[in-house]
Length: 414
Image (cartoon, rainbow, N blue to C red):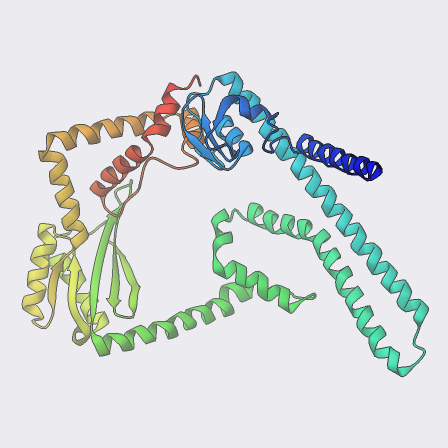
């Protein structure tokens, strides 16, 4: 009995020892709070999952590591602490960076080990197939299947090693051709890569002549064929002609014409109006030509902005062609309303002026733009809009949304 008792006692000691080892192994486990993050936060519910920051009183969920990111201000998992002392922030940034580097190193080592194991297994399988030979017809099929699997594994490993070189060559093409980087997001680029991959080795790209002659004509014909579906829809349901003009910084003006129907909106053509005085007669001639191009019987309404010359031209068009209507542009109406708000309401005028002062001050200094991106997580303050005066109000909304980030920016030592 005594012997069994001592054995039982020994078992308890072992269990206690293993639990203490477990606690020492996991320094963030309940009952073992040796991690430095515990010194700067208060455990809210005793679970070690919710911390109340001692500096800003914000509650951070997700464990002590996420809380350290809050103190370091990485903005990855939670909003950064605005009042943490600089020395604590630098310490936490170092800890988080070291932890991330260690994790990436382990990941790379594991990846290398997996690749080596895959190669070893493939080589062993190949050697095994070589030793077996083809003693009988019955075993020949299974041997071929095993050889195919081995070859597939080797092909995958080769692709994994070659991908960085292929990526580098694609990037080099973009850089040396001055192609905008957002072209990578174009679905046509992804489709191109996919079809080249399906074609396989030996694909020869089209020549310079093919690109600028044969293939270009094919693309134009394909576009015309797709537009024919829209033209058929205009005959069935009618359509709206929309005109949209703009002027660049060099005072060159262009007027674009688009056609809208239940099937969708398409671009028709554009006119360079830089050398045209936009009198009522000239505007009427432009609108009348578009109606003839689309077909008067298909047009329900013509939409333009609300300037006096366009309004007069629209009324003349309705008089000349009684089966259609001239309609003022709703976006232009809203633009005029916003302009009146800024001109006639003092609070709007003052607020917009202050907002412009802030954005002009920041965007006039390269260093401040760089700092702004850091504090606003890469976002911009100036919000380009469809209309001139809407831009001011969109920018004000952005300033209000990022008020806290801007306050931290201007109160920082930088």
